[in-house]
Image (cartoon, rainbow, N blue to C red; front, side):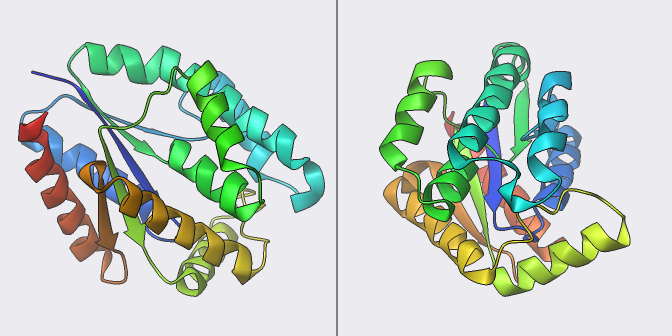
Length: 213
C-alpha cells in the first residue's frame, strides 16, 4: 500500500487537533496504517522547540529567529518521522506543516514568502503534503475557542493567541490563497459546523483523495 502525507491547516481554534484524531481513527478503521503527528513537534527536539516557540510573550523571538526555529523543528520532523513513515507505506497526518509557516511568519509577520519557500526548498528538500485540508473559520470565533481551551486546560501555548484579530485575519487569507493557488492538492473544509460534522467532511475528503495516489 502506498504511503501518503496529509497536513491539516487552519486558524487557531478551527479544530485541527480533533480532525487529525478523527482521520487517524477513521483511516485505521479502513485498514490503513496511520500516524498522527504535529508541528511544531513530532520529535523530542521538535517538542522542545514547541515549548520555546508557543509559550511566553509575543516579543520573545525576532521574526527571523522564529522562522529558523520553526524550520529547524520541521527538518527533524521530516527526516525522522514523515519520510520514513511514508516510505514504509504509512499515511502521515500532521497537525500543521509548512503552510502554517507561510501563513504565520509570512502573511502574519510580513516576512518575504520567497525567503520562506527558498529556505524550505534548501533544508527540507521542498517536501510538501500530498493533500492539505484547510479548516476555514472566522478567526474571531477560532480565537475565542482557542483562548478558552488554553485557559481551561492551563496550557502555556498562547503566544500567537495573544496577537490581535487582524493578525489572525491575515492568517486566514493566506491559507485560502494557498488553497486557491494549488487546488489539486488542497481541500477547503468549512469549520463552522459541529466538530462531528467537520470531522466527517474531512474524512470523506481524504477517502476520496487516497485512491488517486
